[in-house]
Length: 222
Image 1 (cartoon, rainbow, N blue to C red):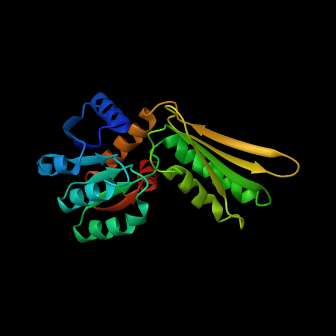
Image 2 (cartoon, one colour; image 1 turned 120 degrees about the vertical axis):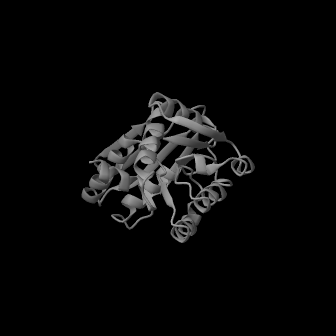
Image 3 (cartoon, rainbow, N blue to C red; image 1 turned 60 degrees about the vertical axis):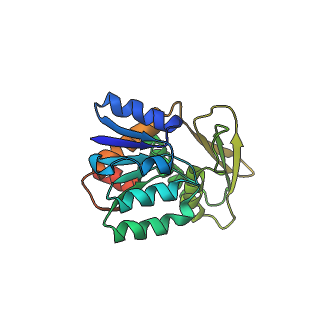
């Protein structure tokens, strides 16, 4: 599999490391859309995109219009996700997005939903911590968590966001009552967990057409 890494920050470097460990080829590494437009996308099998909210939409739409399957983990731009879905359909493209590619985080999401369903009388809040370079606040994962469990609660769930040093990603859900308190936490120790999930998604997507999320990949991996 020949991969174009779109965005060479901390996640881009982690993707490169995991891809090379699996003996995949890095076709190109690009940091801007102008660089993306200079390379021959037809020689690659898939693009893996981790950039920023300002660049993600243009990067993804360019890949889809160029018939390059693309996996994206960028967040902060998801109000435009429906437009990407339409572009993907129009150009018969291949696209997969997730706010979090950690396999254990997806298990954490499922546990959180089961707890929420059984603790409807509790007050609930979410705390998320990330490194100071992370631009979107709250994180895409925290928003996803909230959306998954909000359906069980009438009161709006509060998200608290903290940015400090080089925190890879910590998400805690608090359930509080007058009598007791439950909290569950997912803490990422390094970025390899996200990179591995993104590579797995690329492996799954490369011979498919359509608009997908990480859950689609996980269902088919079972």
